[in-house]
Length: 158
Image 1: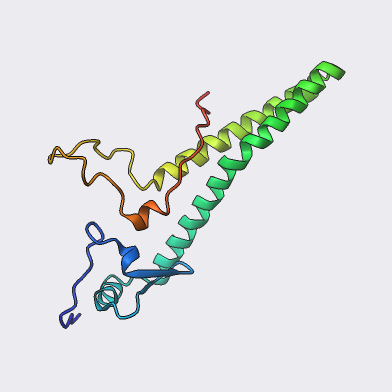
Image 2 (image 1 turned 135 degrees about the vertical axis):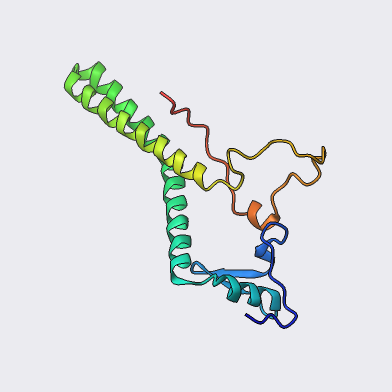
């Protein structure tokens, strides 16, 4: 592929958010950015398979994040109901059913956490120190940092 003075963008040194616009899981070069255009062509960034992978990743992250944010509220309501059944009605069968449901929810939360860890901006096995002995560059590029979020501390390791 002829590059005519254009250069490939290095995703490890160039924040792609400065060069591309994401539109429905496609990466479109910013207007007039010849290097982004060349990079998009060379890497075939909008191959249908790559678009599908981006969409599936986005949907998974959105779904798992929603689950981990909303489920604790629902669990609290279920626990309240279980306690009321046990105290007011002595309903041990209902209580057992609720415990089964809670265990299922706990497993769902564990899977959601594992899924989100796979797509973390900073991999779990990333070193916490580097050879430069400086913390100056130990930040995410703004384009990536703006897409990250902290998960609630759920403590579902039981």
